Image (cartoon, rainbow, N blue to C red):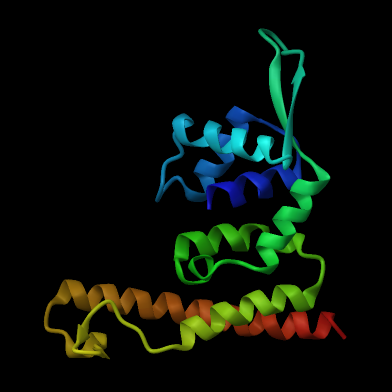
Length: 177
């Protein structure tokens, strides 16, 4: 998720590491704060793999700044990861949101639609946070008001996302013609 966010934000524009960290925190920080001890090793891995480069630019007031730029190979890797997301990026909401934030970088509406169809198929499967044996329980079956609340909120969120997915898939279908 972190590497995808780094590649995605750098695809948009070259950034200083501090600004990149702020962007990632705004996207995912409410769930997973981005520590420097996590971000900078990931940047180094991507740099070593040739997916981004670091350039030194004069600072406005103080010391020179290191600006990160995506390489052509980095752009190809981002588009590959967007077109072929791992299953976790489809099923885990936080990973999904990160993927969705950059899906516009896939130029082909059919490729975008293929990713959205995978998420749609996942959401259409019966699921719950609570089960009786192998059977998912609905909110109406629960006496615990807090667990019922979890399922009620999840159902509303899923309905909204399903509606958005179907509308967007229809729109992409028209754009692909």
